Length: 471
Ligand code: SF4
Image (tube, rainbow, N blue to C red; front, side):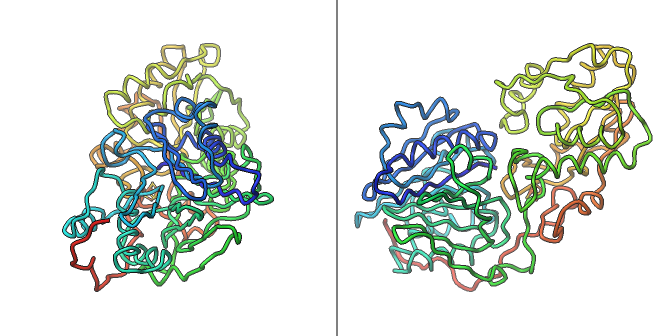
């Protein structure tokens, strides 16, 4: 997943872009909790701070104040591939022998990462990480410095040759470039107020930096902001892809994005309520009370309870100081996290028919333990309702579902999962129902539900040129 942010302040009196970036990253903390970083430019020199840990721990008031500059880009990391260490933290900074500096942050995954990296390594390019951001940066600078292409033309090379998902920000000393993959897979938006421009993964960070939402960045669009203002280089995304459709990640609206964000022109909280209402339409087991598994299923459960006209309450209390279980990289840590994470309020369970609502079941580690907890607290029956279809396939576009073996819906039937959970009944939303709730539903990726992977790049005849090259 990951979250990115870019700040450009045009007014001479403002030089606190890094501080604004830290605020905005804090609002995007749900998109990644492993590491965070900010690159800031005073118009001349780029400096970088990145560390393992949360934004509020790394970017203290004191530290942010020292990072003077009118341009900044930032990143919060959620690990998909690559180890959990500082080498894989973004931004990446590249200082060339000719004295130019480039910093980059990106959100997404490059499917043909190994192939492109090998091509560059053969030309003498050195990598310090296993991170897509470093690959994009070095590929781009390779074409720009070595082959003399403009930055825009170098970005187009990426669009021709990289298969996958990348919402990206490039900082050079007095400019920020923003570009998005031709399928528009991860969310990417722009906001503005007066002379401050903000690029971000999600709209939920715009309030805290006091700018207004302008629009989404289009698939394959390249934007530049500098002292002349904002300029777009719109492109036809079909020049770079095998289908005429976008592939927005539908899971962003179900689980990842914050409910107060607008993602792909959908209000996330509203969309989640509709998922719940849709589940309620086909319900035959009417419970005494509906309980969400907090937090991402809150609005789904609310919509479901409203649809049925039954009680809704927060019977499970989540400890917010434990990370989201789904995005912690190792299974051992995840399991411990689940038991530390929730407490039940017995009054909402004792002697009742309870329906627990969740947004999805990926590995099934959380719900099984919660069913036990709810029964222990006196529930007469425990039903489970899921506001999305069965997750049967891995995601290769920036979400941590590395193998199909880890996905419980790929291993078991609905009945078997219900038994494994120890629930009285289990029902998922159907893929047809999900699609019916999505505006322009052809423009979305549903691959983790149906296995139809939409992101493919047109075959290209050229490779990285065979010249020895040092930056
Ligand atoms: S496979 Fe699933 S999680 Fe990945 S981009 Fe597609 S819809 Fe999103």
